[in-house]
Amino acid sequence: MAAWVKGGAADVDAAVEAAADLLAASRVPVLAGLSAEVSALRAAYRLAETLGASLDPVSGPSVYAELGALSAGGAMSTTRAETIGRADVILIVGNRPWDGELIAEIAAAAPSLGRAAGSERALLSLGGPQNGAIRHVAYAADAGGLTISLGHLRAFAKGHLAGEAAFADLAKRLFAAQYGVIVYDPEEVGELGAEMLQGLIRDLNESTRFFALTLADPFQGRAAVQLSAWTTGQAPRVGFGRHQPEHDSWRFDSARQIAAGEADAALWLASLPAPRPAWLGSLPTIAIVGEGSQEAAGETAEVVITVGVPGQSVGGALWNDRRGVIAYAEASDPAKTPAETETAAGVLTRIRDRLIEKGVSC
Image (cartoon, rainbow, N blue to C red; front, side, top):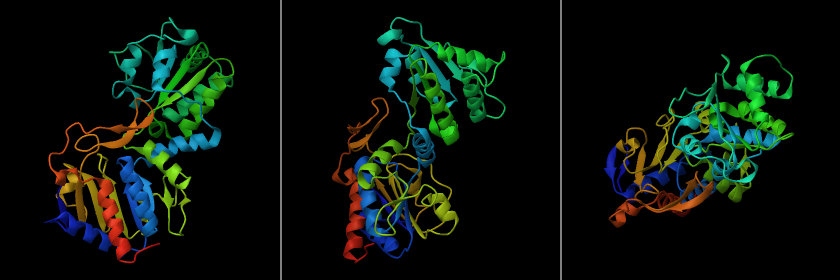
């Protein structure tokens, strides 16, 4: 494990001390990123409570698009396994679901459970790529984008619009399903699009069975949602500045806080790869990142500490998208020396301990 303080190589003890000094001198710190294993997320929440800091996951746009739709009208969801086993009609919305192996895995199988067992599976696409490798019926999105397209589709499905438009044909196909699933990425469709899709699913369930298979973001956002819920009873954008956890998705948006000059220090946690925010390095920053990350050059933060990557050099509890649960991931290439087994949780705990020793407490 390596560490840097103000661009110079340092041992971990010195880096932890420098991080504690930086946070102790701050008045409104933020902990951002949170792309990490569950133990590190738990340690981050404990550190934020000690500091009176706020937390904001890099997965916030995806998390809040999904939570916004859920709070507005609820959700009817299913799992990957149920989709593969039961669905005879699948609508794939946008581009993101075509990344990875999910659609190919769905296309390779036929329904084997429930009423649709033995039926031919119909794959439908709205606003997605023309993927010639997988047989499907593609419907182009409106010029206004996915959100407008979803509004038009729901209007045709409810009978509020009529005619020979392609969406009328798509709506008929959806209502003909015995067990249908809509696959989409909440961040790609946005909160309004996700709300529109869940409304469409409720409409479809008036005469058939239909569910959503929403894609998890790749930055442990769903693990952060669950941990925040069992720790604070609230969603991940939480602040401890008034001695108790307060949730506000606007107020504790780290990008907004930093752009407005409200925050005066930041800790960026990304033991798993995550896109660096534009603000990184624009204020006193500590970066705790996985080994091999670009941040390790020490160019974007005053204090940089590299740690083991969960699921690679160290084990850790992570969101398992295939199973739809938090599950322990063994190290695929275990660290060879004790120094290489340092975890983000361990570093965060050491920083918190030093702050407590210095008399810092919210």
